[in-house]
Image 1: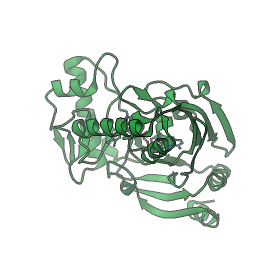
Image 2 (image 1 turned 90 degrees about the vertical axis):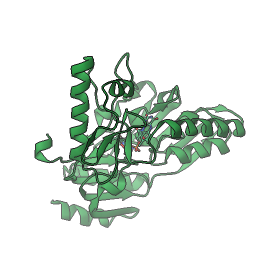
Image 3 (image 1 turned 120 degrees about the vertical axis):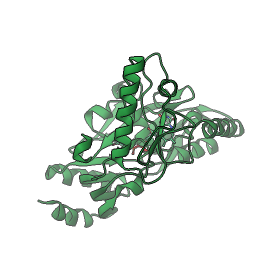
Length: 307
Ligand SMILES: Cc1cc2nc3c(=O)[nH]c(=O)nc-3n(C[C@H](O)[C@H](O)[C@H](O)COP(=O)(O)OP(=O)(O)OC[C@H]3O[C@@H](n4cnc5c(N)ncnc54)[C@H](O)[C@@H]3O)c2cc1C
């Protein structure tokens, strides 16, 4: 079955939106990326499971997208199906637990925690991704990370089977989890929090978010920290010491405000960002002897000369 036939089958599913040639730059925080052959947006976990079964049956390649805040999509886009999960956004609490679907944004989740008077998610309130993306990345900030709160995940295997994983099985590490290795889709997440005072929780979130605003170039599109923290160093400090602040290729620039961020100063192509990443890596390796590994995930097709 070819992709247009798969599109027809998916379009007949209830609770599922299907778009052809979707411009992925509209779905990423970098505002970069070519088209996806098909963008599929399930509205609930049943629809997602049915989609996965159809894709598995036809051996169709796919990529899972949350808020697109940690990815660089190639200028030629993605051949196959992009599954966008922001429609899965139910949240509920049970005592001190919050149970939420993976497409909910961390901002909405943080607001829910305030209202439920539960503390423990303050660190995540300003991270501009979905809960699913945050679990996959073991996202963290200001001394907290997802592994501190996540106790259970329901995930879909590439064959469309639901599985439950406990915290140990998720193999959390620095910006790492089992889901980056097994390709399972995070569907629902259980988090254990502590009772707190809603005013104090809200104040803490506001304080962390204003620290973020002061330090980070939030006025430009980016994918956050471009590189992982190399052991014993801070990527931003190293890049600054190389004199690379403001270094620009095409529309991509090492931020003047925070050298750990590559920003899109206008019309950047994925190829500009990739060349800039490679330039920074070479300089830091040559002058400081440190290997910088991208934190940002590269997805889809890049121009041949960039590979
Ligand atoms: C301004 C800015 C500030 C940031 N600050 C921080 C920070 O302080 N700390 C931090 O850790 N990160 C930070 N980030 C990076 C990013 O927001 C996080 O990594 C976030 O958790 C990514 O979530 P997402 O939904 O956008 O994932 P995406 O970028 O859409 O996807 C990231 C990866 O996860 C996979 N994925 C997404 N959802 C699922 C799912 N449900 N199941 C399986 N796989 C999935 C994707 O396939 C991809 O490989 C920042 C980014 C920006 C732009």
